[in-house]
Length: 470
Image 1: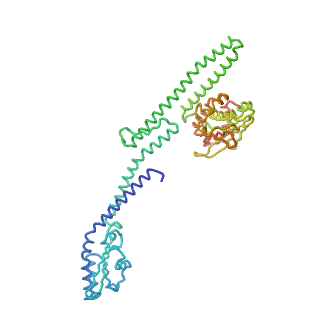
Image 2: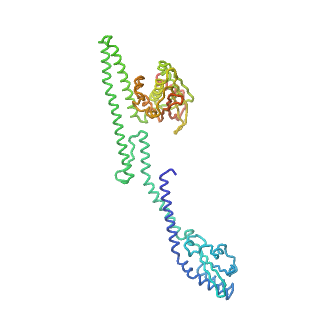
Image 3: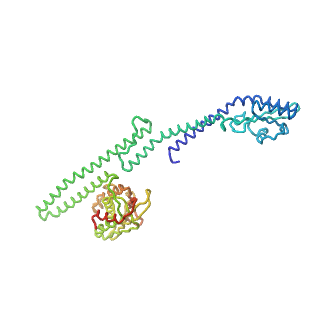
């Protein structure tokens, strides 16, 4: 039982049911009925009168006496002599013989009254002539079955205790269920998720915990939104002076001589880097503010990856590298072409940037099975120096670079993989990076496959037109 609700409910119910049953049964056993008490007080008289009737009139006399007792008290009696023979010549049930031998507890004892059947009373006597006689009185079964007249109270007690325990368990666990649902939404990026406890209800520890969670979620939402607004505002504000800087740079080129050309070229390069940085910042801010309502269409990853590899091959030539594409399975996903193209392209270009000169970057596409069903798996591997193990989870953070010197040398600012992670997450996918045993880094992107994979030819044409490539 993994459910906390079921554990609490069944534990409380079992405890309550056992308490009700034991309380009623023990109370009944400790308080014998008036009929049993009457028979218990007269059992010695019954035995003495029956023996006298037997001695004076034989089986006929004792039969008449026992018949009269039966009509009065509605009980059966078995009397045996010291030889174990019934005075009426009958063959008693086996349990009567055990009762006469003292191997069963009579109903006059505590444990005897707890038994459902048979219930009996027992008495012994020895006459003046030395003969020993034993009386066993078989009591009628109690009305109402196993628990006698308390059967209905026991049933009602168990049923009512089950209802009370159900309400109690639900009261204790419902806040946990709501907290879990709100936590899942918050982890998926829904910053508006709240546990939502009314102020007028639940002032216990669980209620305070839910209110603390709501205050925490509200604070997180304000901080994240403020960060996003700050990032967007700064990026927009920087674009205006950067544009004026570019204009001033062109004017300076016209008015200055050749001796200032190298300095102006350096200013131009730095301005372009700044412009690229601002564009990436705006992209991250836009992706952080996106929701699942982004426009998606079915697209075939094979053609998307082939186009990306074809463009990246020009950059790979400068490092004497090649980009190899290995398509194992056809994969059709539902996504935004622009975002997925940017996501895969950032990973491929990053692999080209860090792989050893003269080596190849491999891009492999195949189908796999994940926690959410069938997925398209894109693996990009290089033969570079790899990444320290403690830095693998940090690669997708904005502005994170393992080596600042290497980042300046390659021109990276630590935003490409951050953009990729956000674009993949918007498509319901995952991304991870691992070091290869033979050296290098492998980045794996997993995207859920589209439900309907028909009409692939039309989709391919649509992708080509969206990419603007023939």
